[in-house]
Amino acid sequence: MAQRPVQANIKAVDAPAVVPIAAVVVYCADPRAMARFWAEALDWTQHEVSDGHASLRSAEGVGPYLEFLRTPDVKTVPDRVHLDLLPHAGDDKSAEVARLRTLGATDLDVGQGDVLWTCLADPEGHEFWVLALS
Image 1 (spheres, rainbow, N blue to C red):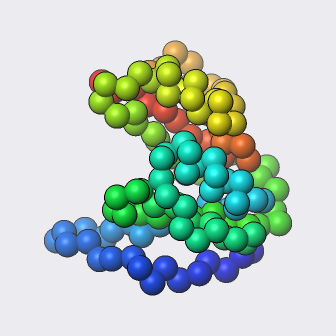
Image 2: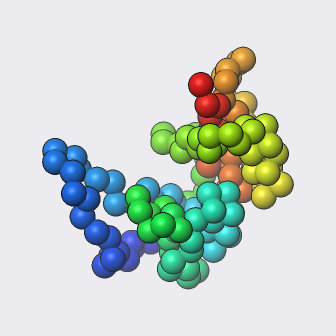
Image 3: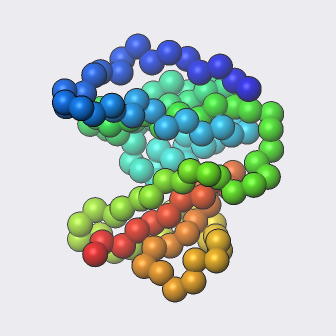
């Protein structure tokens, strides 16, 4: 399993009684490809990108990093954690789902039935949901 580089530029969050999440780490076969997909999907900025590791963060430089680490292991079971994406207020969820499909996301049936969210998978099969504003 790949070693994760230390992020020297992570800043502390000034919030009492909160333990901030510094990064969400995803193991994958191709960190470069995953970084391209997710940078486009989230409109985030790529920071470090190599064959073994890639990291993204919001263009505003706030919130956790999304990091991808190369692993030789093949994904064989559903993820135990997934991302929930929420379109911006006024954005059309259907249009956002169509945009993500154009980037390489695929539809995913996890037995969800008739729900307000759409289940998708990124190009390596990691599950994520696109929520609807309520």
